[in-house]
Image 1 (spheres, rainbow, N blue to C red):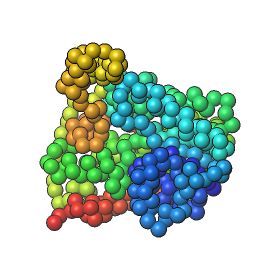
Image 2: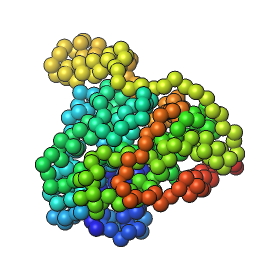
Image 3: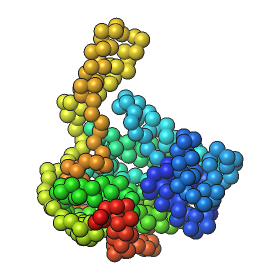
Image 4: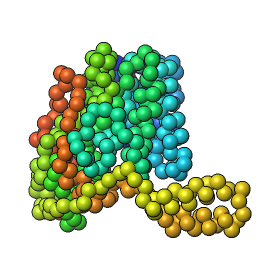
Length: 349
């Protein structure tokens, strides 16, 4: 089996590549930035030679292609276009290598950070006001649009809250939040373990006919019914601290607040004003942009966002291909997470 991976330097992308190597599969990795490739190869250690960079792979054909990449940190008026180009580049590269199955890795966040009902395995409504949510929805739609009347089978794999050793939002940031004495939620975890994600992607890689009958949307959240307490309590025991549970108002995506609209207008005017408008007007636009310029909130480093999501009461029900069974249960996942916490210095000194 040979696979093409876009976004291999991501947390889940690296776990998938590790699983492919363990199975003896060949991996072609698409990394655009030479520095990122050097860092990636350094992290791979002795296994770096088993991964071939796409630029040096020639015309090698692949069986499976998966995209973990998405656009970040671009002006809002370029956001749709850049995400669309990314997906087009991915599907074009996969078609050129005759991949039979293509997977676009997405997120439960396409339904927002707070659910009004259990999210269905169907198309997500386009929402505004959050770059991560918007980007994932745009990529999903572009991916499915490119898949019409094609020889390959598309799979949109939406992930729940990813837990695992070194997972930034739901392990490292969560642990830091608790060490700082901040409250976390105790609602449904809607979680998936990183090793299980890698295994599921490998599972669907060689099953095009079953995927065609199943439909394009996959929801991966094998621990969706688990309460966050079942994950947080063992982590806190490892760190020798007491957890603090609280409630937070739900977060919503789907509207543009006045500050967000003003930020957007400031960026738009500043973008158009280069070499076109008088200097004084350009300066006003730049001042407006800098005064209101705050990055889109992300899960990383935002304790309020974490706590609000952790109080979710609706379940992100799993929807996966028949026959797949997650190799790691919750006890295995927690053992590996707690071991990582100790090794990373989160345990007692």
